[in-house]
Amino acid sequence: MQCLKISAINLDIIWKDKMANFNLLEKELENISADLFLLPEMFSTGFSMEPEEIADRNHESLNWLKKFAETKDTAICGSASIAENENFRNRLYFVTPGGEAAHYDKRHLFSYSGEDQVYSPGNERVIVNFKGWRILLQVCYDLRFPVFVRNNGDYDAIFYVANWPETRIDAWNTLLKARAIENQCYVFGVNRIGTDGNSLHYPASTYCFFADGSVVSEVEGNIVSAEFDGEKLLEFRKRFRFLDDRDEFEIKY
Image (tube, rainbow, N blue to C red; front, top):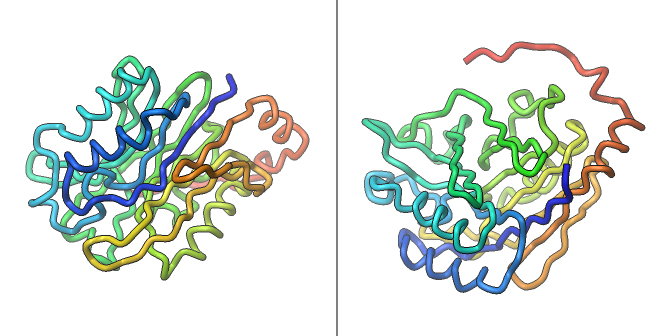
């Protein structure tokens, strides 16, 4: 695993305005260099339960991600509301510098807000490989379900992209740290900031945790950056072989 520099953005998403958010991101990230950029959940619109109004029907968000990746010669990851056949999905894209795209459809839909009534869930874990790193892709509410992400020795890091409001922010902070410790991996969680169209407020709460639960990210303005160190992670896992004692189980959908 090569050392991997990741930069996430505390983005004050402009409500339901894709072009405005694309332009904002280009401006904010213009002078930032990283191997990989990480964007919040539904980065192009904000987290909305009106997919018939906001959902991509012509790959708008994906096309922008591909263009950004090519222009900056970097990988980029972020989720968007998309229309697919007769369904809507909360889809997290991972795009490489060469324009190759993988995606994960959010498995755990936020029933508290009615997400499960308007979006269709995914039914598989998705792990992408980038520069020797195996990265598990997750979205917001997935964070509350540790069984689904239990490390079977098949990944080195988890990305969580979110719109997680201030009223429940202690859970976000605590669970990110817990996922890193219990799975002996890096966990990078990116949350939006500002106030959305539903009058929910989001504080700056983007962090990267190492496998021992320590914060390894640094903040400069709206950019939160961290470097994944493969040798450090492998040495930690070799010294503390806790994953060898994990329970075996089967997930049923």
